[in-house]
Length: 322
Image (cartoon, rainbow, N blue to C red; front, top):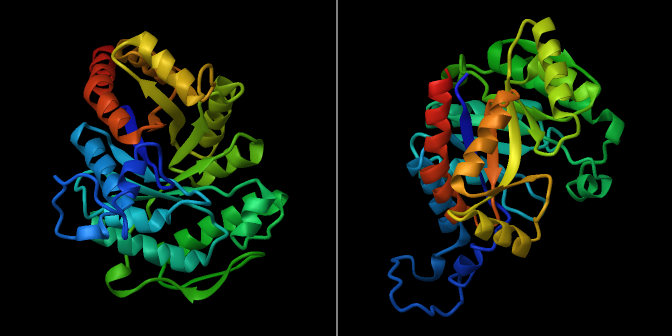
């Protein structure tokens, strides 16, 4: 499989987005050179759109709208960004406990219709009980995987069948299914996460992509375990790795930037100059990673640096190795 690179949109803001906050409604405009017909309607969404366009211009394969408790809705962001970029895949991260599986599937196939099948789901539920309850989700931690499986069964069922019936512990549908313009449309690509046996088994049965974090204990062993499970299911899925990246043309300056940002020595962060980061990506690829899901403290600048200077080197080396 060819290597894929996805960029994470800072839906809850980042250090760069503060400049856009100064341009919000009711704020004085300090830069007289700004000319925008919307006046004081300039918002942080304009920054997210810039990040997405940077990712598209520099060769990323897609963007992910992250689900943050204190951030904007991932579905809304993905939908609006779909009008800003024409090539990128758009993944919305959300929990299976925040609504009807049937309605989520209907929203998804509608999104597929209007985005030329560029939509994807990244399904994850916080393991923090307080965060779940803040969102109105009171499920016990031990039942999250079972509910997720039912969500996938129902959403796949109504999207693929005209008369689908299911009764489970968490979801129920009678003679469901989509007709008219929504019939015959595929569900989005599905990304799942997790490192325990239940999570890996669920991905082996249902996922198109399984995502690990950089710094996962025994990453090689987890990948091998997942490969064995998917082989037993007669399937093959992509392996994604989520990582923070702090790039700089000068390696020492990259280390300084990491230290200033509080990520020096962090196991979830890749730091270095463009050549060293290229080598790190290629090494991880050799270990079985098919997709990199990247984010950075200053999203816009880092997306440009990675896309312009690192991705071409990685892809050129990967082609030579093939």
